[in-house]
Every structure is written in structure tokens, then in C-alpha cells.
Length: 187
Image 1 (cartoon, rainbow, N blue to C red):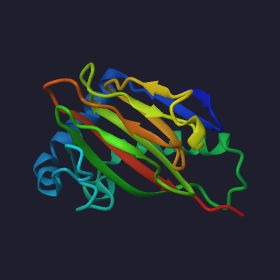
Image 2 (cartoon, rainbow, N blue to C red):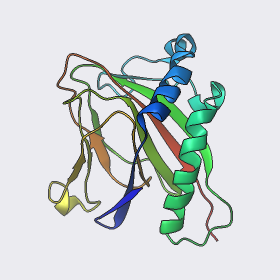
Image 3 (tube, rainbow, N blue to C red):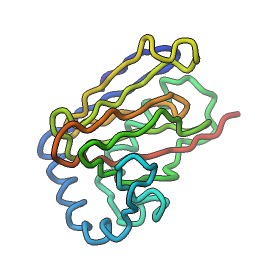
Image 4 (spheres, rainbow, N blue to C red):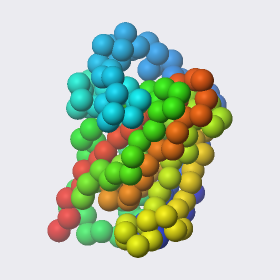
């Protein structure tokens, strides 16, 4: 587990072993017909198909226990690094699969207050679009950005208020990722 301290935010980065990623992909692929039915075209008008609109929590709905078993301890570790006065452990509240087609992108956005957010890259061809984090202040919006090149099996976890975008998929292949939000309570 690596922690990058950028701006006032922390990004947790974890790389899954190839056999773990393979097991996750098998579990996801076994549910592909269900996922395909839940995909909504161009969810954010950016050439990304997502289950976001049609399914609140894909991990729970499709019983992707292996994914949850891997992400839960990482989210707990990340939460502890925030040094917040916690009343309970973070709870998974939403998750979705994104399929970024060629030229797909996502504009700058945040996930919200009291959220820990993240992404697991299931299939990330080279040049399929970096995730870019940037400072929250408008005057610094294009200075000091931090890019992460997605890799198969990479997990990034960050605070839900961290501004981020996904750059263009410059390949002729799809990038497939699973995103998630955990909610936490503060004293």
C-alpha cells in the first residue's frame, strides 16, 4: 500500500497480484449479462457507459464478495490515515462499473462530503486515459495536477471531495473500471 500526499489530500494506491485480479475478473465476467443489462449509454455525456444510473451498488447487487473483501480493509486503512474522529467504520453505499469507449473521458468532478471514493481498474489498456487529481482551489486548477496512469489491478482510494477527471481514452479499446463510495460518520 502506497500513500501519496498531494495538495491537502491523500491518495492510496494498491496493486493487486495477477492471480487476485484474475479471480476478480472471473467473478465479474460470470455476471456480465447482468452488468450488460444495467449499463446506461453515455451516462455523463462523455462516451462512458456505466451502471451508475440503473444500479445503486453493483458490488452488492451482483454479490461481488471478492471485490468487497479486498476493498474493505484498504478503505479502513485509508480512513485511519485521515485521523478523523470516527463513530463507525466506513460503509459501502454505492458502486458501479464504467466502460470508457475510445475517446471516452470524464469532466472534473467530486463525489461529495463524508465519502471515501475509489476505483479498481479491471482492464486498462495503455493510453486509455489517466485519472487526474487537481487542487481544490480555482486559482490552482491547472497547476500541480497529479496524474495516475491506470493499470490492470490498480486500486486508487481518495477522499470524495478530491477534484478529479479522467482524460481521453486514446485507444481503440474499452477501459473497464469499478468505482465505489463509502460513507463515514464523524463525531
